[in-house]
Image (cartoon, rainbow, N blue to C red; front, side, top):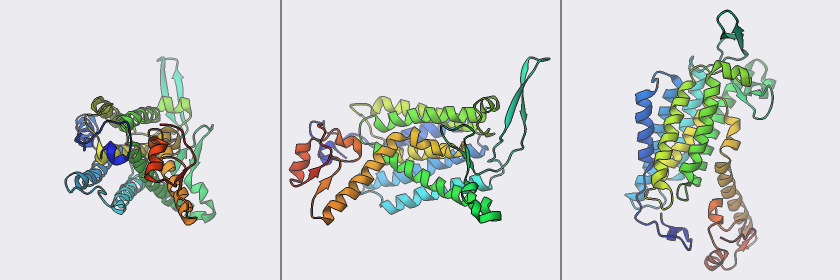
Amino acid sequence: ETIRDLGLEGQMSKKGTPTMGGIIILLSILVANLCFGVLHNVYMILMLITTIWLGALGFADDYIKVFKKNKEGLHGKFKIVGQVGIGLIVGLTLYFSPDAVIRENVSTNFDRDTYTEVVEYSSEEIKSTKTTIPFFKNNNLDYADLVGFMGEHAQTAGWILFVLVTIFVVTAVSNGANLNDGMDGMAAGNSSIMGVAIGILAYVSSNAVMADYLNIMFIPGSEEVVVFMCAFVGALIGFLWYNSYPAQIFMGDTGSLTIGGIIAVSAVIIHKELLLPVICGVFLWESVSVILQRFYYKMGKRKGVSQRIWKRTPIHDHYRTSLSLVQKNDPGCKVMFKGSS
């Protein structure tokens, strides 16, 4: 895809720049984790499956665009099926796997004889549909509580709700990352920052002392998410060197769909999915801008008027597109926000 195809002025043409650079990112992540990760850890397995699954989905889309010369790429419904599929796999695995457990009410005591901290658990490892509500003390939300009216079936219904939330989160964040991949270095730069945030949250969730200090659930085995996110951030920073302006290579859907899925699945694993609107605020706003623009445009068409909220969407294109260009392509178009490019 070129800048000319986007209809943007004052930009250097990107025609001829290699794409599908996401393959480099994926290989870097996979090789690092195969070398240093604990491969029988359920969370590491889920992260690797997510990387390969969405990487293959994005590769199919890029392959159709580049080699089949079809700008539409893989049909949208197949992308959605693939994203829903991996979300279902992750949700059901966390439900059925005996290793996907949490420990609550972690306490630490100081042993004056040995001058060491002794970690004690006041509860056993349990399967739980609880997640963390951001910015609230004693901040756990149990999905089963939302369906408490179902009585003895509430726990089962809570897991069904958890799986549906997982599917939604994976699909939404993956598509958000895809939309964010529109300017040199933007998707890689934003995602690396998000990866650092998820990595820190995974570390404190996997450390009993830190979990007790921060009053959050302790998740045994989630230290492998830290290992994975270190490889993830490292791969993105390495790629960013070649993807920053002027980009020498693009990640394509092979990279963007996958990095969004990785961020989503890692957040679900450590029960921090409700934090994603904050951590992935850029992705959220990109997606919302497209949805609102499409809705507003269709409403105008029903009235026989061509109108937009922004000059272009995703929202980052609004700030680099001139109003004169929009009106040249659509003379009767009315734009609500007209900030200059």
